[in-house]
Image (cartoon, rainbow, N blue to C red):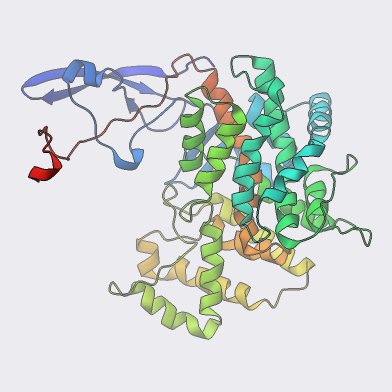
Length: 434
């Protein structure tokens, strides 16, 4: 990766009676950045930024978010255009390669991913080490990490060809592993992938087919699954992506890095947010209960929280939520659940959030998690699988970010600093004298 940041002048800092000039750079779009790489060496001080909310940890050319305007771009392409016109496999190529493929490139890439979907025959025995009631995300974390024990020929992160092979294997095998985690916890036999099916159709078949009868993929649900994957494919330097980059900065193999991202994604403040949103709708239960619920949300002394609204980055309407809302309606109509009481509660809550001054002032607009939980449940997935589906989609983003990091000449092993507030130096006292 060639660095493309542009110099834009300097920022002056006065500290302890001394003046320092800090370089200022700009990207192709977005806020300028103050370069503090030599800050400690020149000033003897650290910067303090818990959560890294004001710190650019890397240069990237993959995803751009404008939270104030509600914009999400993959390699410059708006997310709504990709969701409407593209396919997940095409988006995978875009995120990995930087450009949309031509017809021949897409055909070859699709074939490559399709023929990597099988797992090593011995790998299926690995699932037997888990209890049947294990959370699917626990299974995913262990299983993906275990891939490194099966594919020794693609672990050298300094070899571009091996990195590419690992990337293809992860994108291809993640749905197979996810479907097996689903089948294992439900006590059903594993279903092998079929090469004649496209990516989302193959995944749905591996999840819901049984040996006792033929399974026909519903094209509406396959399209919904494909769009869901597109919407969740990447989201800039979020917690799990930053985890993958941090793990990768040590030279860890790609399977271990992606497993670390899955572990981070499992957190309820990250990938588990759609579960929380669905639980909230069930707790409300009926449209008639919404006024009392909203009253509790507004009460500063109440611990009731509004889930699925607002976003740490988006201070406007989440652009993915608009697509997800349309997708939700299509799926509910297809499965005959247009009278779903949860959807009615969701619609009424959305109306209130977009018009009530309390929510508008705080910019608590519906986010993607608000609709995705309802959609996935209507498709037949249990709540425990929601974050797994998120992981399947986000794998390509993690890989693209990891690959970009490996090829970045300015990359160093991650090593955040701290403000130490513990005891100062003191002498050891023998136990008998304490």
